[in-house]
Amino acid sequence: MQLREKIAIVTGAGRGIGRAIALTYAKEGASVAIAERNLSDAQQVAAEIQALGRQAIAIETDVTSEASVASMVQQTLERFGTIDILTTNAGIQRRMAVHELPLAEFQAIIDVNLLGTFLCCKAVLPTLYAKREGTIVMIASDSGKHGYTHASAYCASKFGVLGFMESLADESRAYAVRVNAICPAGVKTQMSDTVTEADGRHFNTTHFMEPEEIADVALFLAGQQSRAIHGQSLQVYGGVDYSYSLL
Image (cartoon, rainbow, N blue to C red):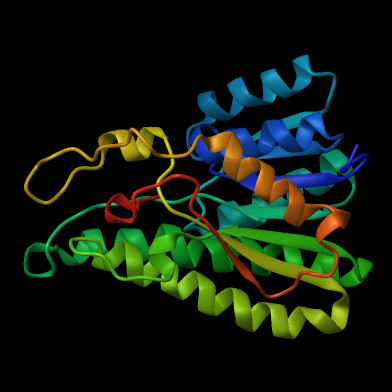
Protein backbone atom coordinates (compact mmCIF):
# COMPACT_ATOMS: atom_id res chain seq x y z
CA MET A 1 0.00 0.00 0.00
CA GLN A 2 1.36 3.38 -1.02
CA LEU A 3 0.07 5.36 1.98
CA ARG A 4 0.24 2.83 4.78
CA GLU A 5 -0.11 4.50 8.20
CA LYS A 6 -0.18 8.00 6.66
CA ILE A 7 -2.56 10.68 7.94
CA ALA A 8 -4.24 12.81 5.28
CA ILE A 9 -6.52 15.83 5.29
CA VAL A 10 -8.69 16.33 2.20
CA THR A 11 -10.78 19.50 1.96
CA GLY A 12 -14.04 19.57 0.07
CA ALA A 13 -14.06 15.79 0.47
CA GLY A 14 -17.80 15.31 0.82
CA ARG A 15 -18.36 14.73 -2.86
CA GLY A 16 -16.82 14.80 -6.34
CA ILE A 17 -13.06 14.91 -6.70
CA GLY A 18 -12.47 15.32 -2.96
CA ARG A 19 -14.52 12.25 -2.10
CA ALA A 20 -12.71 10.20 -4.74
CA ILE A 21 -9.33 11.32 -3.39
CA ALA A 22 -10.28 10.53 0.21
CA LEU A 23 -11.46 7.03 -0.72
CA THR A 24 -8.39 6.39 -2.87
CA TYR A 25 -6.06 7.46 -0.06
CA ALA A 26 -7.92 5.19 2.36
CA LYS A 27 -7.73 2.21 0.01
CA GLU A 28 -3.96 2.73 -0.06
CA GLY A 29 -3.68 2.62 3.74
CA ALA A 30 -4.19 6.21 4.91
CA SER A 31 -6.39 7.47 7.72
CA VAL A 32 -8.31 10.48 6.45
CA ALA A 33 -9.77 13.68 7.89
CA ILE A 34 -12.78 14.61 5.75
CA ALA A 35 -12.91 18.41 5.85
CA GLU A 36 -16.18 19.57 4.37
CA ARG A 37 -18.60 22.47 4.86
CA ASN A 38 -21.57 20.07 4.66
CA LEU A 39 -21.13 17.86 7.72
CA SER A 40 -23.61 15.20 6.60
CA ASP A 41 -21.67 14.71 3.35
CA ALA A 42 -18.44 14.44 5.35
CA GLN A 43 -19.98 11.88 7.68
CA GLN A 44 -21.15 9.79 4.73
CA VAL A 45 -17.66 9.66 3.22
CA ALA A 46 -16.13 8.92 6.62
CA ALA A 47 -18.53 5.99 6.96
CA GLU A 48 -17.49 4.70 3.54
CA ILE A 49 -13.84 4.83 4.59
CA GLN A 50 -14.56 3.08 7.88
CA ALA A 51 -16.35 0.35 5.93
CA LEU A 52 -13.03 -0.23 4.15
CA GLY A 53 -11.41 -0.91 7.51
CA ARG A 54 -9.64 2.47 7.66
CA GLN A 55 -9.95 5.30 10.13
CA ALA A 56 -11.68 8.55 9.25
CA ILE A 57 -12.99 11.66 10.96
CA ALA A 58 -15.62 14.03 9.57
CA ILE A 59 -14.88 17.69 10.33
CA GLU A 60 -17.26 20.52 9.47
CA THR A 61 -14.92 23.08 7.91
CA ASP A 62 -15.25 26.48 6.29
CA VAL A 63 -11.93 26.92 4.47
CA THR A 64 -12.47 30.70 4.28
CA SER A 65 -12.40 30.97 8.09
CA GLU A 66 -9.00 30.92 9.81
CA ALA A 67 -10.61 29.75 13.05
CA SER A 68 -12.47 26.92 11.33
CA VAL A 69 -9.32 25.76 9.53
CA ALA A 70 -7.33 25.89 12.78
CA SER A 71 -10.00 23.75 14.44
CA MET A 72 -9.83 21.28 11.55
CA VAL A 73 -6.09 20.86 12.02
CA GLN A 74 -6.39 20.61 15.79
CA GLN A 75 -9.11 17.94 15.57
CA THR A 76 -6.99 15.95 13.14
CA LEU A 77 -3.96 16.12 15.43
CA GLU A 78 -6.03 15.16 18.47
CA ARG A 79 -7.49 12.16 16.65
CA PHE A 80 -4.45 10.90 14.74
CA GLY A 81 -1.44 12.51 16.40
CA THR A 82 0.13 13.93 13.25
CA ILE A 83 -0.48 14.98 9.63
CA ASP A 84 1.43 13.69 6.61
CA ILE A 85 -0.61 14.82 3.62
CA LEU A 86 -2.76 17.86 2.88
CA THR A 87 -4.90 17.93 -0.24
CA THR A 88 -6.62 21.26 -0.83
CA ASN A 89 -9.61 20.52 -3.03
CA ALA A 90 -12.47 22.72 -1.79
CA GLY A 91 -13.60 24.99 -4.59
CA ILE A 92 -16.54 26.77 -6.19
CA GLN A 93 -17.28 28.05 -9.68
CA ARG A 94 -19.55 30.66 -11.25
CA ARG A 95 -19.71 31.69 -14.91
CA MET A 96 -20.60 35.28 -15.72
CA ALA A 97 -19.35 38.00 -18.04
CA VAL A 98 -17.01 40.41 -16.25
CA HIS A 99 -19.30 43.41 -16.70
CA GLU A 100 -22.15 41.47 -15.05
CA LEU A 101 -20.11 39.82 -12.28
CA PRO A 102 -21.10 41.11 -8.80
CA LEU A 103 -18.23 41.89 -6.46
CA ALA A 104 -19.65 39.46 -3.90
CA GLU A 105 -19.51 36.58 -6.40
CA PHE A 106 -15.94 37.42 -7.42
CA GLN A 107 -14.88 37.67 -3.77
CA ALA A 108 -16.55 34.36 -2.83
CA ILE A 109 -14.67 32.48 -5.54
CA ILE A 110 -11.34 34.02 -4.54
CA ASP A 111 -12.04 33.32 -0.87
CA VAL A 112 -12.86 29.63 -1.27
CA ASN A 113 -10.42 28.71 -4.02
CA LEU A 114 -7.37 30.82 -3.17
CA LEU A 115 -7.71 32.11 0.38
CA GLY A 116 -8.90 28.67 1.48
CA THR A 117 -5.81 27.04 -0.01
CA PHE A 118 -3.57 29.55 1.78
CA LEU A 119 -5.27 29.12 5.16
CA CYS A 120 -5.15 25.31 5.03
CA CYS A 121 -1.49 25.25 4.04
CA LYS A 122 -0.53 27.81 6.67
CA ALA A 123 -2.28 25.82 9.38
CA VAL A 124 -0.68 22.49 8.44
CA LEU A 125 2.87 23.69 7.70
CA PRO A 126 4.09 23.90 11.32
CA THR A 127 3.39 20.18 11.77
CA LEU A 128 5.02 19.21 8.47
CA TYR A 129 8.00 21.50 9.02
CA ALA A 130 8.60 20.14 12.52
CA LYS A 131 8.66 16.62 11.10
CA ARG A 132 10.71 17.71 8.10
CA GLU A 133 8.45 15.49 6.07
CA GLY A 134 5.13 15.72 4.29
CA THR A 135 3.29 16.40 1.07
CA ILE A 136 0.82 19.03 -0.08
CA VAL A 137 -1.29 18.44 -3.19
CA MET A 138 -3.36 21.36 -4.44
CA ILE A 139 -6.25 20.79 -6.82
CA ALA A 140 -5.95 23.68 -9.24
CA SER A 141 -7.37 23.59 -12.77
CA ASP A 142 -6.67 23.90 -16.46
CA SER A 143 -8.29 27.29 -15.80
CA GLY A 144 -5.17 28.18 -13.85
CA LYS A 145 -3.17 27.85 -17.07
CA HIS A 146 -5.56 29.44 -19.59
CA GLY A 147 -8.14 32.18 -19.36
CA TYR A 148 -11.66 31.26 -20.48
CA THR A 149 -14.64 33.40 -21.36
CA HIS A 150 -17.17 33.92 -18.56
CA ALA A 151 -14.75 32.39 -16.03
CA SER A 152 -12.68 35.40 -14.98
CA ALA A 153 -13.02 34.94 -11.22
CA TYR A 154 -12.46 31.20 -11.38
CA CYS A 155 -9.43 31.58 -13.64
CA ALA A 156 -8.02 34.33 -11.43
CA SER A 157 -8.38 32.12 -8.35
CA LYS A 158 -6.72 29.14 -9.99
CA PHE A 159 -3.90 31.18 -11.52
CA GLY A 160 -3.39 32.42 -7.97
CA VAL A 161 -3.28 28.88 -6.59
CA LEU A 162 -0.49 27.97 -9.01
CA GLY A 163 1.55 31.06 -8.15
CA PHE A 164 1.05 30.34 -4.46
CA MET A 165 2.05 26.70 -4.99
CA GLU A 166 5.29 27.63 -6.72
CA SER A 167 6.23 30.11 -4.00
CA LEU A 168 5.40 27.68 -1.21
CA ALA A 169 7.33 24.92 -2.94
CA ASP A 170 10.39 27.15 -3.01
CA GLU A 171 10.02 27.89 0.71
CA SER A 172 9.23 24.35 1.83
CA ARG A 173 12.17 22.75 0.05
CA ALA A 174 14.37 23.53 3.05
CA TYR A 175 12.01 21.51 5.27
CA ALA A 176 11.79 18.46 2.96
CA VAL A 177 8.08 19.11 2.37
CA ARG A 178 6.93 18.56 -1.20
CA VAL A 179 4.28 20.81 -2.77
CA ASN A 180 2.61 20.21 -6.15
CA ALA A 181 -0.64 20.92 -7.95
CA ILE A 182 -2.99 19.11 -10.31
CA CYS A 183 -4.60 21.01 -13.19
CA PRO A 184 -7.56 18.99 -14.50
CA ALA A 185 -9.73 20.02 -17.39
CA GLY A 186 -13.32 18.73 -17.37
CA VAL A 187 -14.36 16.36 -14.57
CA LYS A 188 -17.79 14.83 -13.99
CA THR A 189 -18.85 16.32 -10.65
CA GLN A 190 -21.93 17.90 -9.14
CA MET A 191 -20.29 21.26 -9.73
CA SER A 192 -19.82 20.65 -13.44
CA ASP A 193 -23.42 19.40 -13.62
CA THR A 194 -24.80 22.66 -12.24
CA VAL A 195 -22.48 25.23 -13.84
CA THR A 196 -23.80 26.73 -17.04
CA GLU A 197 -22.57 29.14 -19.67
CA ALA A 198 -23.45 32.80 -19.14
CA ASP A 199 -26.32 32.40 -21.60
CA GLY A 200 -27.77 29.52 -19.59
CA ARG A 201 -26.58 26.65 -21.77
CA HIS A 202 -25.28 23.57 -20.00
CA PHE A 203 -21.84 22.20 -20.73
CA ASN A 204 -21.48 19.04 -22.76
CA THR A 205 -19.80 16.81 -20.17
CA THR A 206 -19.82 13.64 -22.27
CA HIS A 207 -16.06 13.45 -22.52
CA PHE A 208 -15.26 14.76 -19.04
CA MET A 209 -13.05 12.63 -16.80
CA GLU A 210 -14.23 10.67 -13.79
CA PRO A 211 -13.23 11.96 -10.32
CA GLU A 212 -11.34 8.73 -9.72
CA GLU A 213 -8.96 9.59 -12.57
CA ILE A 214 -7.94 12.75 -10.74
CA ALA A 215 -7.73 10.81 -7.48
CA ASP A 216 -5.16 8.48 -9.00
CA VAL A 217 -2.98 11.47 -9.90
CA ALA A 218 -3.36 12.83 -6.37
CA LEU A 219 -2.29 9.46 -5.00
CA PHE A 220 0.81 9.54 -7.19
CA LEU A 221 1.76 13.00 -5.92
CA ALA A 222 1.01 12.10 -2.30
CA GLY A 223 3.12 8.95 -2.35
CA GLN A 224 6.78 8.06 -2.65
CA GLN A 225 6.64 7.27 -6.36
CA SER A 226 6.65 11.04 -6.99
CA ARG A 227 9.42 11.82 -4.48
CA ALA A 228 11.44 13.57 -7.20
CA ILE A 229 8.55 15.88 -8.18
CA HIS A 230 8.33 19.25 -6.42
CA GLY A 231 6.84 22.61 -7.34
CA GLN A 232 5.09 21.23 -10.41
CA SER A 233 1.58 21.64 -11.82
CA LEU A 234 0.51 18.50 -13.64
CA GLN A 235 -1.98 19.04 -16.44
CA VAL A 236 -4.58 16.27 -16.62
CA TYR A 237 -6.75 16.37 -19.71
CA GLY A 238 -7.91 12.82 -20.37
CA GLY A 239 -10.12 12.84 -23.46
CA VAL A 240 -11.57 16.29 -22.84
CA ASP A 241 -12.40 18.65 -25.68
CA TYR A 242 -10.45 21.80 -24.73
CA SER A 243 -13.40 23.98 -25.71
CA TYR A 244 -15.23 22.58 -22.70
CA SER A 245 -12.38 22.79 -20.21
CA LEU A 246 -13.87 23.08 -16.74
CA LEU A 247 -13.00 21.62 -13.34
